[in-house]
Image 1 (cartoon, rainbow, N blue to C red):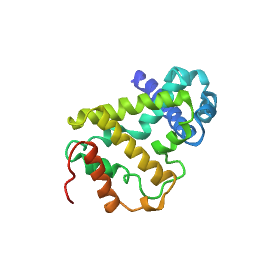
Image 2: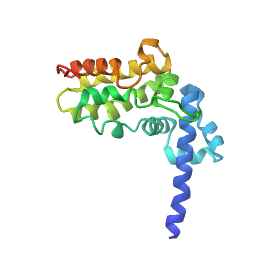
Image 3: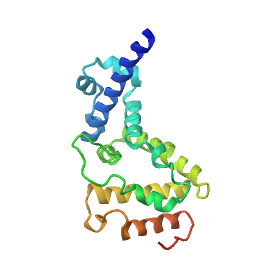
Image 4: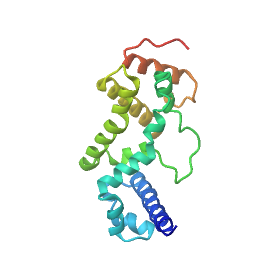
Amino acid sequence: MLIETAIRPAVATRDRILAAAILRFSRHAYEETGLRDIAEDVGVDVAYVHRCFGSKERLFTEALRATTRADRLLADVASDPAPVLAGLIFSEDGPRSPDEVTLLDIVIRSLSSPKAASVLRAFIVEDFIAPLSERLGRPGMREASMIAAFLVGIGIMRTVLQVTPLQEPEGGELERRMAEVIACAMGETARPT
């Protein structure tokens, strides 16, 4: 019992550090986000942040993973991949609270940083592209990379830039056409819907 009660506060503090990091990385450029700032947000010493995560890069990776939960996103892909993947773009539609963060919130603030770019590259390959390629079985890494690029591009144009023709709600022509493009990237012919 003593071990359990000692572990629980450490886990809760680690989770609070991760939550603070997610907010910081979503609102500030990678270079502007410091471990000291994150530690201050949580009320812990910066050494504790280092002990929990090891480095800013590892904390950034954990923030990306927590925001994305790629394993959950890819869970249903094998059954009907093109429509499921197209639907990912619409999964976060609707009003958001000010503290709600998406992967794109972090990505757009980090793209100009060479350090963050290498972490982002490794993350997207290891956590999305490789598992997507493996789950689908058919397309290789190139095709899975094309699908990821398409989804990120549409996501940025739709969510960040709010390009009007891409503002259609879930279940419409846009989602159907996206599924066709994804099916094409997979080397399939899209099924009529």
